[in-house]
Length: 362
Image (cartoon, rainbow, N blue to C red; front, side, top):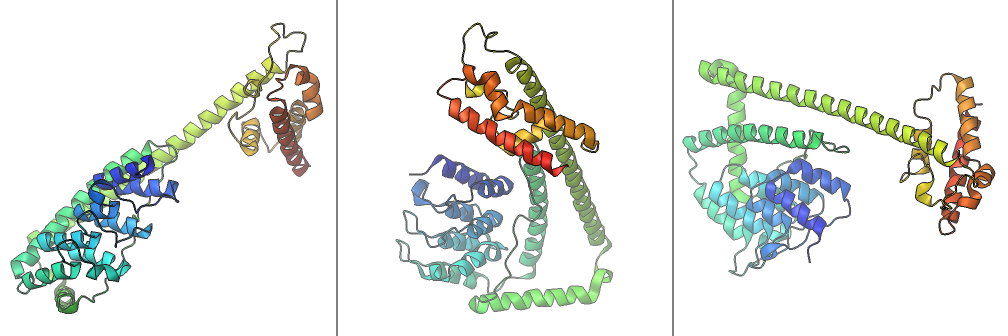
């Protein structure tokens, strides 16, 4: 049965949200990415059907198993090989090569029709015998269009991440593995064609290009540079907003803490006429659901530590507030019996942290 976390992961894979998927996997490091969804397909199956090489590499990096078969016996490598045959272009390098490198044995897994991924790729080899110059130019134009779509898609994902308090994103979504160049004659021939093309480009340089092509490359470079600058500006604004939000949150906690101390510690047992007992939630903790370190941070918020005299005086005041004996004198009779031990344990821990801090500034 698929858990709710796995359903959310599968939805990110189906939507192609690389940034959200990477952040989600970083947050849930122990979450398994190898599980069967609809029609017995794993997230790796779905990524291969969508021809999403970034998601595929990310899933493989987090331990996805390329040998899992769906209800029809197809592995992710079966689906990737079919997409490579249908679409051509760089699908083979983007999908088939990483899967084959991760699990070479999957190349010979039979599905219900008795076909292996190797059999599917043989048909592609036959189709690639006479590629032609026009197909090469089409692939280059298609790659440029795909790059532009990827940049705009990345910008949209970054905008979503900016409004999450703890979200982070990185520019390097994945590190592509080097192409093994080992798939029989087809891979050898393809490598020779690419090497020949690079040699011609290095020899001729920009002198052999038409003015229109050179102008188009300048325009694309300008778009990429402007887009990168826009991303960096958005990231700076996001960090500034996060700092302001954290500052406002800490200031609000400090104000609530001071009001709570005046209200709770300012009353004696005789003044508590309603006879109500103090539970753990009624104690004016600096950070009610935080750790001792977070509570100390709220207590020291806004204190000038450069003025050592005033700083030590403030620490002594706080030590007096949270000293276990003095706390018991002020509030011991009003504590609820169900929360008494929990309250006193936290008071002791907070007092020890303040004492240790006071000793460090002497």
